[in-house]
Each structure stands twice: as C-alpha cells, then as structure tokens.
Image 1 (cartoon, helix red, strand yellow):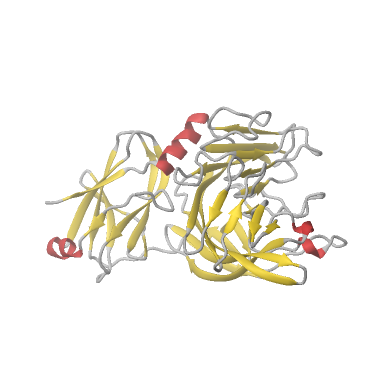
Image 2 (image 1 turned 45 degrees about the horizontal axis):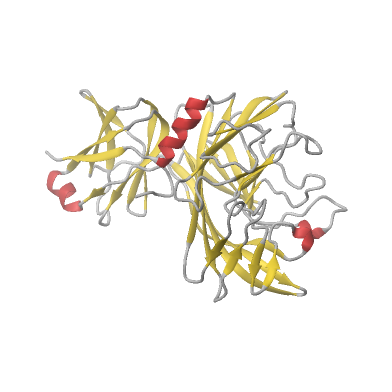
Length: 405
C-alpha cells in the first residue's frame, strides 16, 4: 500500500503491546540503499500510554527521537542503510519526550518551515502582489517561495519579468473546460481563473517532521462573477535531515476534488499544468544543468517522461540543486515533463510535471485525485545512482516485520 510519504508501515495490536510491555520489530532496507529517510509505524488502536522508541545495537539501546500523529509513530532511519541491511527497534510504554526539532513559524502572511531554526521553505498564504507598475491581476496566494538550499541559497523565483504569473512552486492548471467554458487557472493575464488560499486544515511540528495542510480553491472567473471549480488540499511535510547537512527531504501531496456538481475537464495541452518549479534567476544556460531518470538533459528533456528530474546550478554562492521524484500512482505515470530549452530568452529554468501533456484527465464530482511528489534539495550535486536510490526509496519502501517473543 503506497502512502503520501516514503514510510515503513505495519500494524501493531495494542493487546500485544500491553501483554509484553515491549514490542520489537525489524526494518529490512530492501534492494536499494536508503539514506536518512523518514519512517513510521502505524498503530491500529488509540495510544493509551506514553511510548519510548529505542534502537537495539548489540547490547546497546539507543534512544530514537520520535513523533506521534494520527495513531502513528514517526522517526528517522538515519545514516546510510545499505541494500539488504536490517535494523532492530523496540517500542515500549516507558514515558519519554522528544524535542520539536522541526518547527512551523507564522510570520506576516506566511508559514516558514524550519529545522533547528534553519529555514527550509516559506508557504505564502497571504496575497502577494507583483512589483510596482505591474498589473495587479498577477497577485497570488498559496505557493512556496523562497525554497532554501541547506547552505541558505534561494532556489526559487517569483514574478520574473515577462512571466509575472510564475510563483516559485505552484500547482495550477492551464487548458481546462468548466461548465462549457475554457478556463485557464495558470495564465492570470487572461482573467479566466486563479488560485487562492482559503484556510489551514492543520499545522504540525515535532522531532521528525513539520508541515501543514492547506485548502486552496481554483476559481473560475466569468466577467465580474466568480465560481469555485476545484478544491485542492496541499499536504506538505519537511523531514529531519539528521546528521546530513547537505540534503533535505520534503513531501508534497495535492488532493483535488470538484467543488460542486460540475466536473472539471483537464484538457490535453503542451503544458497542461501540474507541479511547477521556477528556478532562481541566478541559474542560466551557462551555469546550470538538467538530468532526468531517462538520461535526458535540458536539450531534449521537454515532452519526455521521467520518474525523476534533477536540476543543479552553480553561482558565486556555490552549487546547489533540486531533485523531484514522481510517485508511481500519479496520473499517467511516468508523467511527462515540460522543461524550458537552453535558448529561452534569458536562459532561465522553468519545469513542471504535466500530467495532461499527453492526454486529458476528467475530474468528476464525489471523487478525490491525489498527486504525490518527493523533493530533495541539496548542495554540491547528486550522482545518478544517488538520485535513482532516492526514487527507489520513495516508490518501494523497506519492509517492517514484528518480532514476536
């Protein structure tokens, strides 16, 4: 069963926990190397006692920071876990506490996710306006910017000249049909649609991850009238990176549902929309590079399918990049890519996973449509093997087995 993050999942009956006072289980890494990945352990019944999690290493018992949420215990499978390796953990009812290393800070219309006080990303829930002198039609809420690399470099860009509608990391749809009318939620200058933040459903912080769930509405504009066509919930979770100061992992899950009784047809189009990333203006054709899981580069990646895409740039501040992993259960996986060529007007980088680049997608009332991506930001670079291992860890979680005494 796939989950919204790369988690290890198994069931534990509370009767077993109370009968033995402790429960021991083994984590089997699987066929690929796993490095500093978040894991969880699902409980089938409500937790009645405070719990303690330790790792058994020979005769030693190493306390493991953990986080409780929705009947699950989350922790970090830290360090390098080679293919075929096993680790033993023990869950007991001894009271303990783990500090909130992963934090959420609300500041002037934005949520900032932090690790040990270091900024990871900023979600803008207040309306952000374009630069002075630019049409206010380009105002937007509900997007991520800045996204920081581990060394503090900003990897995203908003309101770039000539593409005022680009806002860091965002998720609109371009070529759609709603109630008999073509509606574009991406190109704001057409005044056909937009996306707005509505409310937070939750905010979470703890020893292992921090994040939020936010409701956003895709709004169709018909002259002076507006109508909500689509609800979208963003579930964003950033994870503790442990001792690794060079990489960070976070998960992005978008859940779409029709707002009323009318369906929304996402029409096939050369850039249909979906998870979009506008890179910092400091990256250009001479100092950045693109690589996909299929070996495509910026020259030929556009309109190809990929399980992952890696974008790396070097500036005077150093080298950093972003790896975006596409889940196997996403619509039309492996999803097509839109990647700007090197010869665009300033050599800048814009990409998106575009589920409707090759075929249409009809969203029907009463259903939910989920798209999942894992993002790794890093300094220096990643090898092809490291990028592939990261995708394998996302797509094919290790196995957890309960050890019964």
